[in-house]
Image 1 (tube, rainbow, N blue to C red):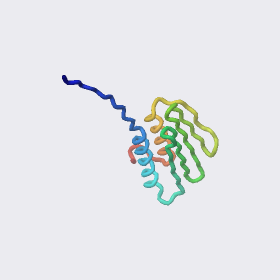
Image 2: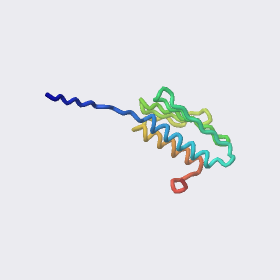
Image 3: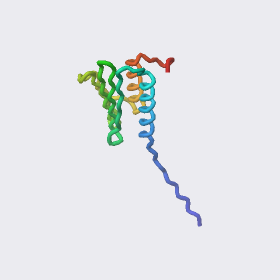
Image 4: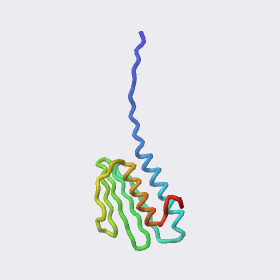
Length: 111
């Protein structure tokens, strides 16, 4: 007698996606900086709390993205300017990327 056993494996690759997207943005910032005062730092705390610090000239931005609760906040020079629930991790990462591109005056065609 042959018994077939099927295992359902859940693979969570969200950390890989996040790391890849954050590295892509770092490369973009590095490629555009050309000696400008630009700082870009990110940290994925506890595998669900993404913190991105971005500073260009006299503008300092901090994004805090709770990926478990799909909640994104943005502070500009210490003042809360965005506090919203979002649809997905990809949506949150897209918001971050487009915001940083806007600050760097980059549009999709220039990338």
